[in-house]
Amino acid sequence: MKNDDNNNPEQQHKNNNKDNTNIGLIDSRFNQTLINVQGLLKGRSIPGKILSSQRVDLPDISTLYSPTYNRSLSYNTAGTSDHTSETREDEVHSTSKPIGPSNENKLKISTSPVENSSELDLKSSVGGRATDSVRVMKFTKVLSETMVILEKLRELAWSGVPDYMRPTVWRLLLGYAPPNSDRREGVLKRKRLEYLECVSQCYDIPDTERSDDEINMLRQIAVDCPRTVPDVPFFQQQLVQKSLERILYTWAIRHPASGYVQGINDLVTPFLVVFLSEHLEGSIDNWSMSDLSSDKISSIEADCYWCLSKLLDGMQDHYTFAQPGIQRLVFKLKELVRRIDVKLLSCTRACFNPYGAAGTGISSICFPLVQLSSNP
Image (cartoon, rainbow, N blue to C red):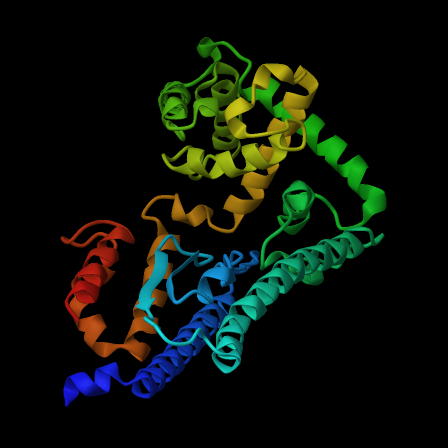
């Protein structure tokens, strides 16, 4: 009886129609899931960046009309390195009739979500470029004012600053350059000359005119400069290290309360890269300090010096004796944890002393936090 059903053409036609219907439903569900996943990915946002999914490769529709076809669809999600792929193989055996118009329409409908997804990806990419253009226009408008409103500039900079605008924005937000554009050039020129005078008085002198403490401090700076960003060849150039040495030693002499402390050298490097980007093009791997004139190097050093001074003015007590600034921040962190998570506070109570037995400084707090996060 079973063999008779299999040999019945009408029964085979019904089975084929049922299989085709299932194929259409599977395709529709798969493509709908694909759209939902891409929609979630497009919902992510990172300050200063625009994420967009890559274009989805359309399957070859001609293979969908054949009685036997293989469908493989893969895509890379934006903002992640995971490669997601979905592959499914369906076989339809038909010995009596080809796929009818109704099933043909189902297959066409099942591919339409993929086409719509590609259109959405294209619109997202265009929207990302449009958003970047709008941000640049906002920065340009704020910076072109005779009196720059620092609150507006700070709000815009919170989500990132365009590369070529970063030197100007940093000078303004750190208080090195005045917001009044009419006074800006004159003030920068005067501050750069003042830096040169400081270098001539503090650095460009023989060791016989330095105290023992100053000689030891200069020696320590000379040791730390080659250690600064050692994996970037640019910072191993002799001219770059000399610039760092002049900036750090001059700052230390002008700030005797703290003097030079290891780690301040790493605070200078972002300023050096940003202000050099105004004069050197391309990747930092191709930069050479020897391409710049001595006047430009002096101006860049001066900008780095004054911006470093402005930055450290707000936290110089982190580097003075007993480090009261760090202790104050640790106390604030302790009070914050007390309000939010008493259990976490009990786990880290011994570490909230910056000079406790568990370790020194803020790093002593991190280890218990990592332990707690790995053992929930």
